[in-house]
Image (cartoon, rainbow, N blue to C red; front, side, top):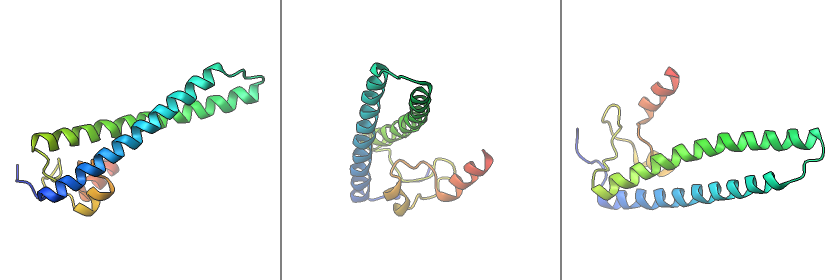
Length: 122
């Protein structure tokens, strides 16, 4: 595997972004859990109320699954930083993941080309 492409200042910048994103996701997940608890205690009077609540709950479950996946990737990236193993390189081709991309998605595992390839394969 090739060496690190990010300097220490960039790694620290990515770490700050990862922590901020982690806190935001955790807050969202807590809010969703609270809303679901409230939904369980609601008295849904008719089929329309029940259908609307079910649709919202179903959407929330999908969002929650996505958020949990993202949180897992963030935690993996933070562990790599902790261990000094965070390189800024693509997991697939070992090319550099640009700092511009990492600033938008600091837990990115793939460069743009590999991410496009993966998306097109699915």
